[in-house]
Image 1: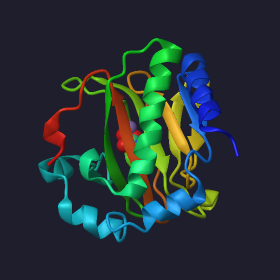
Image 2: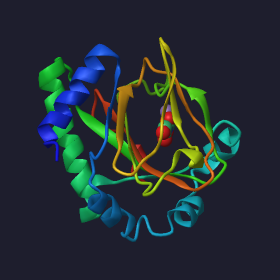
Image 3: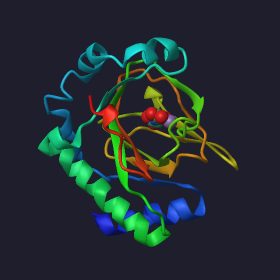
Length: 206
Ligand code: OGA
Ligand code: MN
C-alpha cells in the first residue's frame, strides 16, 4: 500500500514535469464501495438526472452528455468526506511543494450514462477562470478497456488515454490540457473537482 504522502509527491512531480498525474488506488476498493453504497450515489443516474443542471444541459447536450450534482462539503456524507479530506491534504501539499496559492475546491458528482461523451475542451472558462487544477476520481468497479469511456488527454506528444478504473485519480492543469471523454458501454461514475486560486463561490451550492 503506497502512503498518501508518496501519492501527493507523485502528483506534484507529475504536475511539475508534464502538467498531469495519475494515481491508482487513491481511494481503496473498499472506500469506493462505501461511497457507492451511500444514498447520494445509489441510483445516481436517476437522481442526478432529476436534479438536472438547468438550461445549460439543454444547450450543451451535444457537447457533453454527463449529469452532474454539485457537492456541498458541509453536508457531504462521511464516506465522501474521506475523499474530500484527502483532497484538502493535497491542496496544502501542492501549495508547499509547487509554491502555488491554491485556496479551495469546487466539486461535483458525475454520471455519464452509457453512450454519453464530452467533446474536446479546456476546463478553464473565461467567465470563471479561477480553476487551476482539474481532479477526477473514478468510481467504476471492474471497468474493462472494452467498456470504453476513456479520458483522452491531448499531450504535446499526442493523445493519451486513461480508463476510469475505481479509485484512480487524474489531476491536470486546468488551463493547459485539452481533453475529451469518449463514450462508454456502461454508466461511468466519478467525482470531479477543481482546485481554485480563490474561495469557492456560494452560488454553486444550491
Ligand atoms: C470534465 C471532464 C473528465 C472525465 O468534467 O470537465 O473533462 O474523465 N471530465 O470525467
Ligand atoms: Mn474537462
